[in-house]
Length: 345
Length: 204
Image (cartoon, rainbow over all chains, first blue to last red; front, side, top):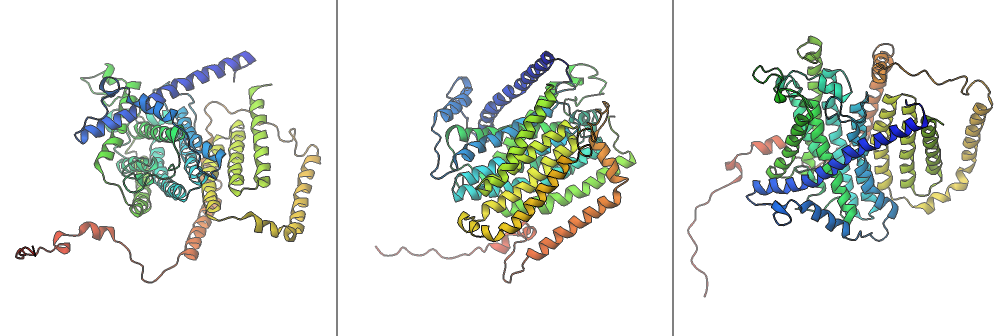
């Protein structure tokens, strides 16, 4: 703890600068993630995606943002004004707050706390409030039903996700995200995706369902119903909900990279012909590349799979994923006790 | 004033204000949300005590799970404020008794000098660098208090099963889907190809 008043101020200022250094690139990443989504899905469907604004359509995200910002926010009659406007903020804040414990490499992390993984779970469970409050404050039965649908989905898949994380905890023996990455040292085959393959699959799919993305996007369901909890929102408030959704997708991708794909570690570690070159060393570039890969999977699946029916979503979450994860947590415990998977080697 | 004290007083103020609001606000949704705020502020105060595991679990369990279900129920019920006031006089005596007992208990704590104040419970010394709160809680739970921990788990399980059996109704004539049967279905079970002569053109 810093001593004098000035030291404390300096500490606060550097902390604020660090937060800005994470949040500003994150917002830009969200903007270009929407561009990437439209381009990738466009190419998969033999279209060209946005091409008009700027070279290759690169300024499209800004055009979209300013269009939404300049639009009027329509308040529904008899809506609870305060909660109606608070809901998007409550959806956004946890999506950004969770980034404080994400380690970009061995030293680049804002808060290297011991219970980092628990903190992330807590933040992602707080995100439900944005949806519920939005649905209720809109004073519309359609918005309310949409809120119930998506929050029931999020709460259900959080359980499978939590169990999948327990497998990681057993193998790494720590809740600290930096140490979890260090426990996976040793190249591609030492990362946790291999010994925890079923949990890895469950985690990625639950992440998809947590963020209400296709094929689990019954909350939005644009081809059947107009929208879910945010049906009454327009303009900037609507944009904030989407900012939160995309920030959450990037967060889940980054988490998958950290927990199952070795974070910033290099996949070629220990290979003799690569050795200690740039490719063989762990760095932030590996972390970003892995995160980008999982972000790409989100888009790929959206272009590939048809939407699940609501009862199928619930069945998959409760009757398929929860038993699989429970069994594999025990298998992971056996791995750990028998020394089949050894930490940090 | 060190920064920890500023943080402590700020969060305590929010905590007390939110707790007061829980019982004074008219709208039940608002009072549930104020309860969420109260949980959050108390979690922050626990963090100041270096009880990070408990603080995060408080948010995870109470804010993330319990209060969400609470909100669901409160939102689904069509709460009308007028009939709720009708019982006010009837329940007043019971309310007064409860309030007096609670106030008396608080006063006992406030007046008992030296037993409950800061000198009796000084701030615990800061932990060494490698200390892990989570590990300490886990070791205690699975060694000294294993029996109590398992018993609590069994009681929770019994409560879950009891709640499900009480609310689960079997109705006759409910149609169910069997997804594995749906997946295994073959073309010739669902489709019949019919050969027929083309009909001559009608009318005109």
